[in-house]
Image (cartoon, rainbow, N blue to C red; front, side):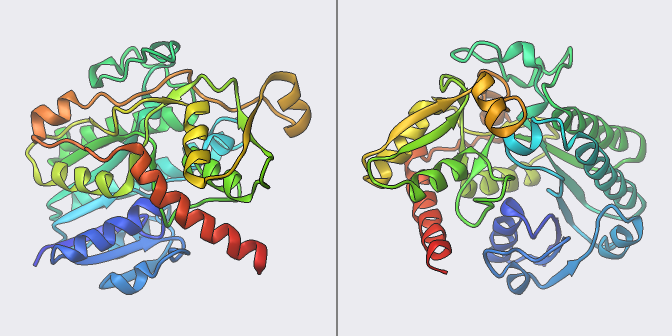
Length: 336
């Protein structure tokens, strides 16, 4: 029986990954600052440790010599309202870098089979993502480096750090650059939620005939990958001989206004879209509108070439499942 450690198991992707690995016969240990608040991941796992991975003693206690696989998903992160305001830059860089350094160091000391590191498309250069209709997120476009956030810079640093541990200390690593993963059982309110969850929440709570506030001009583009396909793609990369970095995302690019219209259509409500930006946004929220780059879309050619598999679920199918889950949570909150 293979043994796996999932770092960040109390989070969104980590929680789904624990259940995925258990279904495939793994012995799984999860670790996080907290239990998963949306489903009983700590009960699904064979062992669940509530601990701070910034502490090297905690990392030493959860990384066993006989661990076959470590999935490093733990990070200080959130959506645009958390990452792009600038107010959380120091914490994002400090906390995530410490976790990654601790895990790389401890895994290299022990006989760990291999380590997966979840990087992000946020590490791609801003200058390649100015055109919302034609962004360039091919893996070899990462340099010259110019991420648009400290979150992206930390991801790029940690990619290089894990690769240096592979070169110098023999640590087997696999690196993926995630592109906007979404689905049920994730943060949907409170400021750290990402666009799919935020849009679902806004539509779910909007009164019939009302409007949904969308940040920015609405023509900025993204692609979004349903969490089940993210976990499958992650696992396939981990079992392969390809180190990466490689994109894990969808190639179905959509503008934010069209995305909002999709969610409104799923809801069946009669709602309009209200775009807020510039001075109006600053007056309301006290900071610049955190929209990020103008365009971002996954390029999956390298993954298809090296792994021989491709994601396939249409965005609207994943959003139907996500909206249903968030609508239920929002209704429960209103009636509580």
